[in-house]
Image 1 (cartoon, rainbow, N blue to C red):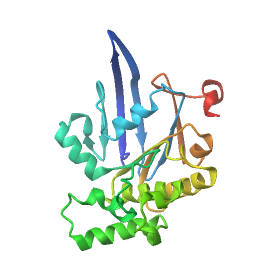
Image 2 (image 1 turned 135 degrees about the horizontal axis):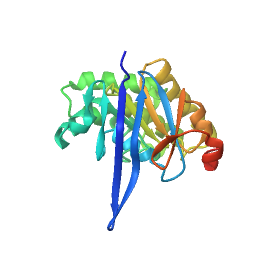
Image 3 (image 1 turned 90 degrees about the horizontal axis):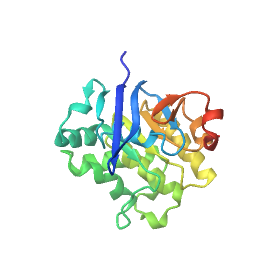
Image 4 (image 1 turned 180 degrees about the horizontal axis):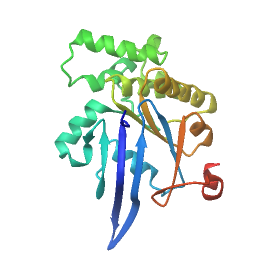
Length: 234
């Protein structure tokens, strides 16, 4: 079976004045179905850039990214936006919940533009909130929830459309240790039990250990020997 994500010879650079800064250089990586992958590395190593490229939020200079056979590198902006809506669930460090909406309404947001009926949307949202053990908090507003509960609402929102992949950018960075453990346990369950492919960027080695696989980046390439190369990740 082919990997769910196939990255080949990926290069990405940014302009800084007259200078071109290479962030990723000829990077190749396969990510399997149901894999929970942690991307680690020092600041500026390219891990967040790689996550954004996988999620279709940015485009590479060269190389390709295939997700279940679709070369997202070749999609138009409109095509990429449609692809993201159907295939990617996002989990952010600071939750990105809408303060004036309830937990239910926040989770329902990605479904509003679909063809689902109101009844079907309610069933999907209830299932997602039940999955993160917050069915009894669906009418609460973000301000009435703890940080860990808000992140679990964000995870419910990410999975409510049944995406192909989940991308998480420092999902435990704003949480206390207990809440972080709960969120990571949930992400582990999404991978191992539900079968979701999860790609997570983290600086926290405790968070990375929850993943089934860890990849280290340094100066835009995959690297080994994290103890020597990534003192801030240990």
